Image (cartoon, rainbow, N blue to C red; front, side, top):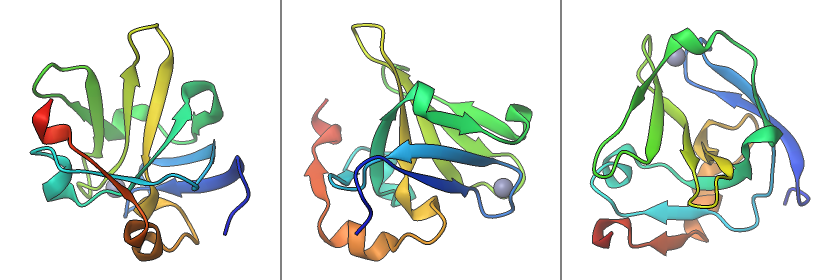
Length: 122
Ligand SMILES: [Zn+2]
């Protein structure tokens, strides 16, 4: 198990989007909204300053739906959604990382102990 706030590298399948993020894997979340349930993401969250994209942001495209608060970033080459961006009501910029896209992280093990969030009801 990774320590709290450890630094990870991750990104999409093809590598057009690569990032570093300092994030805890202690509280993984699976969301049942109309998008997350199809994407199959296991989410962990970090304040935006702890996230650094190392590749050209133009390799990604932002998809929004519902209330358009969350920007789901997918790679325009391989299609993998490796992170999302959102601004909380208090103005805090957050990044939701698809932990399945982190190098060396066992996404299946995280999924097994993830908390289900009822995004479908929001
Ligand atoms: Zn890609």
